[in-house]
Amino acid sequence: MRASLKILYHKIVSKVKSLDKATSYKLGDILRNLTDVNTRRYWDRIFSKTDEFLRDFPYEPLKDILPKDRSFSLLDIGCAMGDGLNILKTYFPKAHFEGADISAVGIEKAKVKTKDINYFVLDLKTQEPPRKYDFITLIHTLEHFNDPFAIVDKCLKFTNEALIVRTPYIEQFDNPRLYLSGEHRHLFNKHTFEKYNCEVLHISDHIEAGGYKYILYRIEP
Image (cartoon, rainbow, N blue to C red; front, side):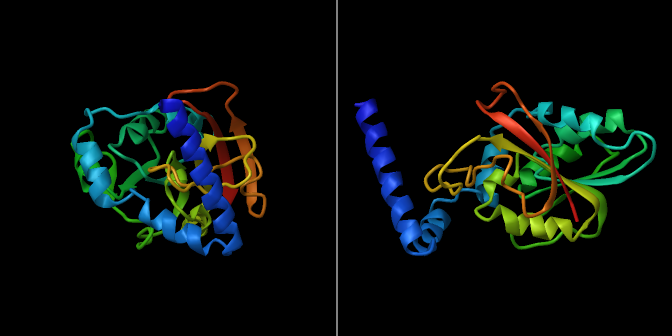
């Protein structure tokens, strides 16, 4: 029964992809908007049920990327409950960190963990960062947007040095747009940001937590 449902699912997705392309992606945009769960209400519910610690492992590679010899400002968008920024603060005590997330519940949980980091609610689809930062990070966040390029363009306007992005990595795919996959809306590989001033910093060589390989980008304004 489960195998039959999986086959049916792939047939439906294949048909949707064909119709999407035939309508210049208009049909797909409608379906993707209808199936996009990435709302403030959804993430408030997720973080309300999540333990006080969420994750910090995706932030570990940044300790070898960010400048160690000077202070800098960094905004982490999609900071969840702040655990990633807390670990970065231990590596870069002179840096000024701020964290933003669509979820007010996540932000409140982040605030009680430290007084050294400024946290605030931000819906990046409808709002802009409050000012410019040396760095903006999107760590396991960009894959949650239907139009990741619009988000990158917006972030670059508020970045002095670089936008650093980490997403799941899929080496090959026929269409990067995801239709019925819930939280994740887009696929990424080493060619995704070729039109930008982008450097691929790292691609993991094994599947990590979450069931994916990951890719790390540095995108400059």
